[in-house]
Image (cartoon, rainbow, N blue to C red; front, side):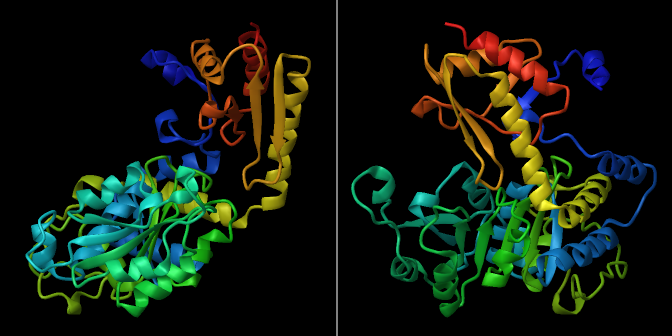
Length: 394
Protein backbone atom coordinates (compact mmCIF):
# COMPACT_ATOMS: atom_id res chain seq x y z
CA UNK A 1 0.00 0.00 0.00
CA UNK A 2 2.82 2.41 0.79
CA UNK A 3 5.29 1.14 -1.81
CA UNK A 4 5.03 4.36 -3.80
CA UNK A 5 6.08 6.36 -0.74
CA UNK A 6 8.99 4.01 -0.14
CA UNK A 7 10.18 4.52 -3.71
CA UNK A 8 9.92 8.26 -3.27
CA UNK A 9 11.59 8.23 0.13
CA UNK A 10 8.59 9.77 1.92
CA UNK A 11 7.17 8.24 5.10
CA UNK A 12 3.56 7.07 5.17
CA UNK A 13 1.82 8.49 8.22
CA UNK A 14 -0.89 7.29 10.57
CA UNK A 15 -3.50 10.02 10.22
CA UNK A 16 -5.59 10.43 13.38
CA UNK A 17 -6.00 14.15 12.65
CA UNK A 18 -8.63 13.77 9.94
CA UNK A 19 -8.76 14.94 6.31
CA UNK A 20 -6.44 17.94 6.61
CA UNK A 21 -4.72 19.33 3.53
CA UNK A 22 -1.31 19.33 5.21
CA UNK A 23 -1.72 15.59 5.79
CA UNK A 24 -2.80 14.91 2.18
CA UNK A 25 -6.51 14.37 2.81
CA UNK A 26 -8.36 11.05 3.11
CA UNK A 27 -7.51 7.70 1.56
CA UNK A 28 -9.62 7.35 -1.58
CA UNK A 29 -12.22 4.63 -1.98
CA UNK A 30 -11.16 2.20 -4.74
CA UNK A 31 -14.10 3.33 -6.91
CA UNK A 32 -12.96 6.94 -6.69
CA UNK A 33 -9.34 6.06 -7.45
CA UNK A 34 -10.45 3.86 -10.37
CA UNK A 35 -12.55 6.67 -11.85
CA UNK A 36 -9.58 9.02 -11.69
CA UNK A 37 -7.25 6.50 -13.30
CA UNK A 38 -9.77 5.80 -16.07
CA UNK A 39 -10.38 9.51 -16.71
CA UNK A 40 -6.65 10.07 -17.08
CA UNK A 41 -6.46 7.79 -20.11
CA UNK A 42 -8.39 9.97 -22.58
CA UNK A 43 -9.35 13.56 -23.34
CA UNK A 44 -12.58 15.51 -22.97
CA UNK A 45 -13.75 19.08 -23.51
CA UNK A 46 -13.41 20.66 -20.07
CA UNK A 47 -16.30 23.05 -20.64
CA UNK A 48 -18.59 20.12 -21.46
CA UNK A 49 -17.29 18.18 -18.46
CA UNK A 50 -17.88 21.07 -16.05
CA UNK A 51 -21.37 21.58 -17.49
CA UNK A 52 -22.21 17.92 -16.90
CA UNK A 53 -20.70 18.09 -13.41
CA UNK A 54 -22.97 21.05 -12.74
CA UNK A 55 -26.03 18.96 -13.62
CA UNK A 56 -24.95 16.14 -11.30
CA UNK A 57 -24.03 18.40 -8.39
CA UNK A 58 -27.21 20.44 -8.58
CA UNK A 59 -29.17 17.22 -8.20
CA UNK A 60 -27.56 16.77 -4.80
CA UNK A 61 -27.49 20.40 -3.63
CA UNK A 62 -30.65 21.95 -5.04
CA UNK A 63 -28.60 24.83 -6.47
CA UNK A 64 -29.23 26.34 -9.90
CA UNK A 65 -25.71 25.52 -11.07
CA UNK A 66 -22.37 24.31 -9.79
CA UNK A 67 -18.68 24.21 -10.55
CA UNK A 68 -15.95 21.76 -9.57
CA UNK A 69 -13.03 23.69 -8.12
CA UNK A 70 -9.54 22.76 -6.94
CA UNK A 71 -10.66 22.98 -3.32
CA UNK A 72 -12.94 25.01 -1.08
CA UNK A 73 -10.47 27.91 -0.87
CA UNK A 74 -10.41 28.08 -4.67
CA UNK A 75 -14.20 28.12 -4.52
CA UNK A 76 -14.09 31.14 -2.22
CA UNK A 77 -11.69 32.97 -4.54
CA UNK A 78 -13.87 32.22 -7.58
CA UNK A 79 -17.06 33.06 -5.71
CA UNK A 80 -15.66 36.39 -4.54
CA UNK A 81 -14.48 37.17 -8.08
CA UNK A 82 -17.91 36.32 -9.47
CA UNK A 83 -19.62 38.61 -6.98
CA UNK A 84 -17.20 41.42 -7.85
CA UNK A 85 -17.54 41.19 -11.64
CA UNK A 86 -20.84 39.56 -12.49
CA UNK A 87 -20.81 38.69 -16.19
CA UNK A 88 -18.77 41.75 -17.20
CA UNK A 89 -15.67 40.49 -19.10
CA UNK A 90 -13.95 43.87 -18.76
CA UNK A 91 -14.25 43.70 -14.97
CA UNK A 92 -12.96 40.12 -15.07
CA UNK A 93 -9.94 41.21 -17.07
CA UNK A 94 -9.02 43.85 -14.48
CA UNK A 95 -9.03 41.68 -11.36
CA UNK A 96 -7.53 41.88 -8.80
CA UNK A 97 -7.84 45.57 -9.60
CA UNK A 98 -11.38 46.90 -9.39
CA UNK A 99 -12.44 50.06 -11.18
CA UNK A 100 -13.25 53.12 -9.04
CA UNK A 101 -16.80 52.82 -7.80
CA UNK A 102 -16.84 49.10 -8.48
CA UNK A 103 -17.83 46.33 -6.09
CA UNK A 104 -14.59 46.12 -4.13
CA UNK A 105 -15.74 45.26 -0.60
CA UNK A 106 -16.89 42.15 1.23
CA UNK A 107 -18.71 42.46 4.54
CA UNK A 108 -17.66 39.90 7.13
CA UNK A 109 -18.38 39.35 10.81
CA UNK A 110 -15.17 39.94 12.77
CA UNK A 111 -15.47 36.71 14.77
CA UNK A 112 -15.58 34.74 11.51
CA UNK A 113 -12.27 36.05 10.18
CA UNK A 114 -9.84 33.20 9.49
CA UNK A 115 -6.82 32.29 7.39
CA UNK A 116 -8.95 31.24 4.45
CA UNK A 117 -10.41 34.70 3.89
CA UNK A 118 -7.11 35.40 2.12
CA UNK A 119 -8.93 33.93 -0.89
CA UNK A 120 -11.34 36.88 -0.86
CA UNK A 121 -8.49 39.37 -0.75
CA UNK A 122 -6.72 37.53 -3.56
CA UNK A 123 -9.74 38.30 -5.74
CA UNK A 124 -9.20 42.01 -5.04
CA UNK A 125 -11.82 42.54 -2.36
CA UNK A 126 -11.29 44.53 0.81
CA UNK A 127 -12.80 42.98 3.94
CA UNK A 128 -15.10 45.26 5.95
CA UNK A 129 -15.33 43.82 9.47
CA UNK A 130 -18.44 44.21 11.62
CA UNK A 131 -19.21 43.34 15.23
CA UNK A 132 -17.17 42.85 18.37
CA UNK A 133 -16.79 39.20 19.44
CA UNK A 134 -17.20 39.74 23.18
CA UNK A 135 -18.34 36.15 23.69
CA UNK A 136 -14.96 34.90 22.48
CA UNK A 137 -12.90 37.61 24.18
CA UNK A 138 -14.42 36.93 27.59
CA UNK A 139 -15.76 40.49 27.76
CA UNK A 140 -19.45 39.66 27.47
CA UNK A 141 -22.00 37.59 25.57
CA UNK A 142 -22.52 39.62 22.39
CA UNK A 143 -21.31 39.25 18.82
CA UNK A 144 -22.24 40.89 15.53
CA UNK A 145 -25.91 41.58 14.89
CA UNK A 146 -27.85 41.88 11.62
CA UNK A 147 -28.18 45.66 11.84
CA UNK A 148 -24.38 45.98 11.86
CA UNK A 149 -24.16 44.04 8.61
CA UNK A 150 -26.85 46.24 7.10
CA UNK A 151 -24.99 49.38 8.19
CA UNK A 152 -21.79 48.18 6.51
CA UNK A 153 -23.37 47.46 3.12
CA UNK A 154 -22.79 50.12 0.47
CA UNK A 155 -22.76 50.53 -3.29
CA UNK A 156 -19.25 49.04 -3.22
CA UNK A 157 -20.28 45.81 -1.49
CA UNK A 158 -19.70 42.77 -3.67
CA UNK A 159 -21.04 40.24 -1.16
CA UNK A 160 -21.45 39.28 2.46
CA UNK A 161 -19.17 36.40 3.43
CA UNK A 162 -20.40 33.89 6.01
CA UNK A 163 -18.34 31.10 7.58
CA UNK A 164 -20.74 28.31 8.49
CA UNK A 165 -20.24 26.83 11.93
CA UNK A 166 -22.46 25.85 14.84
CA UNK A 167 -21.05 28.84 16.77
CA UNK A 168 -21.39 31.39 13.96
CA UNK A 169 -23.44 34.52 14.70
CA UNK A 170 -25.73 35.98 13.54
CA UNK A 171 -27.73 33.01 12.20
CA UNK A 172 -27.27 32.51 8.47
CA UNK A 173 -30.95 33.12 7.74
CA UNK A 174 -30.77 36.56 9.37
CA UNK A 175 -27.64 37.43 7.39
CA UNK A 176 -29.27 36.36 4.12
CA UNK A 177 -32.38 38.41 4.86
CA UNK A 178 -30.34 41.56 5.49
CA UNK A 179 -28.06 41.06 2.48
CA UNK A 180 -30.89 40.31 0.06
CA UNK A 181 -32.89 43.28 1.33
CA UNK A 182 -29.95 45.39 0.11
CA UNK A 183 -29.52 43.46 -3.15
CA UNK A 184 -26.22 41.84 -2.09
CA UNK A 185 -25.35 38.13 -2.50
CA UNK A 186 -24.15 35.90 0.35
CA UNK A 187 -21.11 33.64 -0.13
CA UNK A 188 -20.95 30.78 2.39
CA UNK A 189 -17.80 28.92 3.37
CA UNK A 190 -19.13 25.44 4.21
CA UNK A 191 -15.83 23.67 3.59
CA UNK A 192 -16.02 21.42 6.62
CA UNK A 193 -19.78 21.33 7.19
CA UNK A 194 -20.21 17.73 6.02
CA UNK A 195 -21.49 15.51 7.55
CA UNK A 196 -24.42 15.67 7.96
CA UNK A 197 -25.45 15.03 4.36
CA UNK A 198 -28.41 17.37 4.82
CA UNK A 199 -25.96 20.27 4.71
CA UNK A 200 -25.44 19.65 0.99
CA UNK A 201 -28.84 21.33 0.56
CA UNK A 202 -29.20 23.32 3.77
CA UNK A 203 -27.34 26.50 2.81
CA UNK A 204 -28.82 26.82 -0.67
CA UNK A 205 -32.28 26.12 0.75
CA UNK A 206 -31.74 28.92 3.27
CA UNK A 207 -31.14 31.32 0.37
CA UNK A 208 -27.35 31.48 0.11
CA UNK A 209 -26.25 32.68 -3.33
CA UNK A 210 -22.95 30.74 -3.40
CA UNK A 211 -21.72 27.88 -1.21
CA UNK A 212 -18.23 26.38 -1.18
CA UNK A 213 -17.62 22.80 -0.01
CA UNK A 214 -14.41 20.82 0.24
CA UNK A 215 -14.32 17.75 -1.98
CA UNK A 216 -11.42 16.18 -0.10
CA UNK A 217 -12.96 15.89 3.36
CA UNK A 218 -16.16 14.00 4.24
CA UNK A 219 -17.25 13.69 0.60
CA UNK A 220 -14.20 11.48 0.08
CA UNK A 221 -13.08 12.99 -3.22
CA UNK A 222 -9.60 13.97 -4.36
CA UNK A 223 -7.83 16.31 -1.97
CA UNK A 224 -7.46 18.96 -4.69
CA UNK A 225 -11.20 19.19 -5.36
CA UNK A 226 -14.14 21.23 -4.16
CA UNK A 227 -17.62 22.39 -5.05
CA UNK A 228 -18.97 25.89 -5.63
CA UNK A 229 -22.73 25.89 -6.09
CA UNK A 230 -25.47 28.48 -6.17
CA UNK A 231 -27.03 31.03 -8.51
CA UNK A 232 -26.62 30.28 -12.20
CA UNK A 233 -25.35 33.75 -13.14
CA UNK A 234 -22.72 33.74 -10.39
CA UNK A 235 -21.57 30.21 -11.21
CA UNK A 236 -21.26 31.26 -14.86
CA UNK A 237 -19.12 34.23 -13.81
CA UNK A 238 -16.96 31.96 -11.65
CA UNK A 239 -16.58 29.39 -14.45
CA UNK A 240 -15.51 32.05 -16.94
CA UNK A 241 -12.74 33.09 -14.53
CA UNK A 242 -11.57 29.49 -14.01
CA UNK A 243 -11.70 27.85 -17.44
CA UNK A 244 -9.16 28.06 -20.24
CA UNK A 245 -10.66 30.85 -22.38
CA UNK A 246 -8.29 30.57 -25.34
CA UNK A 247 -11.11 29.96 -27.84
CA UNK A 248 -10.94 30.71 -31.57
CA UNK A 249 -13.77 32.87 -32.91
CA UNK A 250 -17.08 31.05 -32.92
CA UNK A 251 -15.93 27.96 -31.03
CA UNK A 252 -17.12 28.92 -27.55
CA UNK A 253 -20.52 27.22 -27.30
CA UNK A 254 -21.36 26.32 -23.69
CA UNK A 255 -24.69 24.74 -22.73
CA UNK A 256 -26.96 27.73 -21.93
CA UNK A 257 -28.03 26.16 -18.64
CA UNK A 258 -24.40 26.41 -17.51
CA UNK A 259 -23.19 29.59 -19.24
CA UNK A 260 -25.53 31.59 -21.46
CA UNK A 261 -23.14 33.04 -24.03
CA UNK A 262 -25.91 35.36 -25.26
CA UNK A 263 -25.57 37.31 -22.00
CA UNK A 264 -21.89 38.08 -22.66
CA UNK A 265 -20.70 41.11 -24.66
CA UNK A 266 -17.54 39.15 -25.41
CA UNK A 267 -15.22 36.53 -23.98
CA UNK A 268 -12.95 37.47 -21.09
CA UNK A 269 -9.27 36.52 -21.18
CA UNK A 270 -7.91 33.94 -18.76
CA UNK A 271 -9.32 34.90 -15.39
CA UNK A 272 -7.99 35.34 -11.89
CA UNK A 273 -8.97 31.74 -11.14
CA UNK A 274 -6.89 30.27 -13.95
CA UNK A 275 -4.10 29.21 -11.52
CA UNK A 276 -6.80 27.21 -9.67
CA UNK A 277 -7.57 24.93 -12.60
CA UNK A 278 -9.01 21.51 -11.86
CA UNK A 279 -8.21 18.47 -13.99
CA UNK A 280 -10.51 15.91 -15.56
CA UNK A 281 -9.22 13.32 -13.09
CA UNK A 282 -10.28 15.42 -10.10
CA UNK A 283 -13.72 16.07 -11.58
CA UNK A 284 -14.33 12.40 -12.34
CA UNK A 285 -13.16 11.36 -8.87
CA UNK A 286 -15.22 14.01 -7.12
CA UNK A 287 -18.41 13.06 -8.95
CA UNK A 288 -18.02 9.39 -8.04
CA UNK A 289 -17.24 10.33 -4.44
CA UNK A 290 -20.24 12.65 -4.26
CA UNK A 291 -22.58 9.93 -5.52
CA UNK A 292 -21.17 7.53 -2.92
CA UNK A 293 -21.43 10.14 -0.15
CA UNK A 294 -25.02 11.03 -1.00
CA UNK A 295 -26.09 7.38 -1.14
CA UNK A 296 -24.29 6.30 2.03
CA UNK A 297 -25.84 5.22 5.33
CA UNK A 298 -24.94 8.06 7.67
CA UNK A 299 -26.05 6.27 10.84
CA UNK A 300 -24.06 3.16 9.97
CA UNK A 301 -20.94 5.18 9.16
CA UNK A 302 -21.24 7.05 12.46
CA UNK A 303 -21.65 3.79 14.38
CA UNK A 304 -18.57 2.34 12.68
CA UNK A 305 -16.50 5.37 13.68
CA UNK A 306 -17.74 5.24 17.26
CA UNK A 307 -16.87 1.54 17.45
CA UNK A 308 -13.35 2.25 16.20
CA UNK A 309 -12.84 4.92 18.87
CA UNK A 310 -14.21 2.57 21.53
CA UNK A 311 -11.60 0.00 20.53
CA UNK A 312 -8.89 2.64 20.75
CA UNK A 313 -10.12 3.70 24.19
CA UNK A 314 -10.14 0.09 25.37
CA UNK A 315 -6.56 -0.29 24.19
CA UNK A 316 -5.50 2.75 26.22
CA UNK A 317 -7.13 1.75 29.52
CA UNK A 318 -4.88 2.00 32.54
CA UNK A 319 -2.56 4.60 31.06
CA UNK A 320 -1.88 7.95 32.78
CA UNK A 321 -4.45 9.85 30.72
CA UNK A 322 -8.11 10.82 30.79
CA UNK A 323 -10.26 9.65 27.87
CA UNK A 324 -13.48 11.25 26.65
CA UNK A 325 -15.45 9.75 23.76
CA UNK A 326 -17.52 12.45 22.05
CA UNK A 327 -20.17 10.33 20.38
CA UNK A 328 -22.69 13.06 19.59
CA UNK A 329 -20.62 15.06 17.10
CA UNK A 330 -21.24 14.65 13.34
CA UNK A 331 -17.76 13.09 13.29
CA UNK A 332 -17.13 11.43 16.70
CA UNK A 333 -13.84 12.16 18.43
CA UNK A 334 -11.77 10.67 21.23
CA UNK A 335 -10.23 13.35 23.48
CA UNK A 336 -7.11 12.34 25.39
CA UNK A 337 -5.60 14.32 28.29
CA UNK A 338 -2.15 13.13 29.43
CA UNK A 339 -1.40 13.34 33.16
CA UNK A 340 2.39 13.52 33.25
CA UNK A 341 3.09 16.27 30.68
CA UNK A 342 1.27 18.72 28.46
CA UNK A 343 -0.59 17.80 25.31
CA UNK A 344 1.91 19.56 23.06
CA UNK A 345 4.62 17.15 24.21
CA UNK A 346 2.38 14.22 23.27
CA UNK A 347 1.77 15.69 19.79
CA UNK A 348 5.50 16.02 19.20
CA UNK A 349 6.32 12.57 20.57
CA UNK A 350 3.79 10.92 18.26
CA UNK A 351 5.01 12.84 15.20
CA UNK A 352 8.57 11.65 15.89
CA UNK A 353 7.67 7.94 15.74
CA UNK A 354 8.05 5.63 12.75
CA UNK A 355 5.65 5.73 11.05
CA UNK A 356 4.81 9.26 12.17
CA UNK A 357 1.46 9.53 13.98
CA UNK A 358 -0.50 12.76 13.58
CA UNK A 359 -3.34 13.72 15.92
CA UNK A 360 -5.58 16.77 16.07
CA UNK A 361 -3.84 19.52 18.12
CA UNK A 362 -6.84 21.89 18.17
CA UNK A 363 -7.32 21.58 21.96
CA UNK A 364 -3.70 21.34 23.10
CA UNK A 365 -4.10 24.70 24.84
CA UNK A 366 -6.72 22.97 27.00
CA UNK A 367 -4.43 20.03 27.71
CA UNK A 368 -6.04 17.62 25.24
CA UNK A 369 -5.33 16.00 21.92
CA UNK A 370 -8.12 14.70 19.70
CA UNK A 371 -8.26 11.47 17.74
CA UNK A 372 -10.35 11.63 14.56
CA UNK A 373 -11.24 8.28 12.92
CA UNK A 374 -11.98 9.51 9.39
CA UNK A 375 -8.60 8.75 7.80
CA UNK A 376 -7.51 5.73 9.82
CA UNK A 377 -6.84 2.52 7.89
CA UNK A 378 -7.61 -0.89 9.45
CA UNK A 379 -3.92 -1.57 10.01
CA UNK A 380 -3.51 1.80 11.73
CA UNK A 381 -5.48 0.88 14.85
CA UNK A 382 -2.85 -1.37 16.40
CA UNK A 383 -0.04 1.02 15.45
CA UNK A 384 -1.89 3.98 16.97
CA UNK A 385 -2.54 2.19 20.27
CA UNK A 386 1.08 0.99 20.46
CA UNK A 387 2.48 4.47 19.74
CA UNK A 388 0.11 6.15 22.19
CA UNK A 389 0.95 3.69 24.95
CA UNK A 390 4.65 4.34 24.44
CA UNK A 391 4.27 8.13 24.14
CA UNK A 392 2.13 8.44 27.29
CA UNK A 393 4.84 7.06 29.53
CA UNK A 394 6.31 9.83 31.75
